[in-house]
Length: 330
Image (cartoon, rainbow, N blue to C red; front, side, top):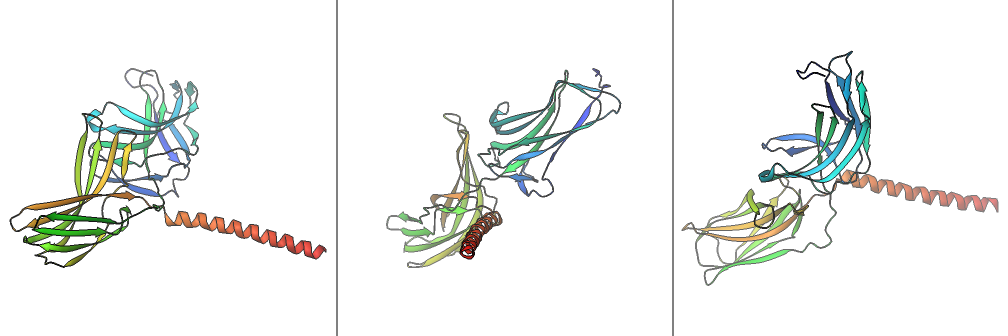
């Protein structure tokens, strides 16, 4: 190894064992672009190979150990120097020594806990990644590989409807109702709006989906509101007794599950915001929080159900065969 870079160096490549079959998911990066990453769920094993390729064949590479880490961390953009790690696993691949030729190392992190969903927001980023490192005296060689984690939920046991009123005394009285308060990310918000009293001239009404990202604690709390969707309910003046239906499809919007107090660092909440505008451009608001959750993959669930049914059939058929054999022996 030389101070001027004439010594041996190497390239690192991380390859997952199931890279050809594992599903990928789109995920937004910090610059707002979308890339595809390998998709994992909580409890899944992460395994693969670390390929170390020497750049100068025939020369040896001295090192102080080779390792791979699986890391889950939260980074707050206003505090970029500090990375808050909530998962940190390490596997040593090689003891200190020399590499005389390119080499491949196997690794496996079994049933890894991945408690939170991957998230890139306006002030915070939650990411999972693998990092392979060759430790050296002067400068380490390392390679990172990001993955995406989705958190799955089951249907909520309680999912009551939302009923609310908007009123201005002697001028306006509106009731609106949504069919439930918890929606999965590809759900449809179904509702109705009833005009009980209309004495002001409303010219426009819409429903907005607002995402509120909260980061920090105490005096250092930052709130970022982002309007994800605008849904026009009506354009024109309503009359008393009129009822307007609402059908808002969520699948077309960039939504994440609701996240509450993630590792005591940030939260992401969603609100339905009813907006009324009268002819004098005055705006009236009514806001209601909704819970968003990610539904499990139907194929994955049906396969597990099929396995359970198959095992039950197997147990049933073996029991029947045993009974038949008993009767024949009699």
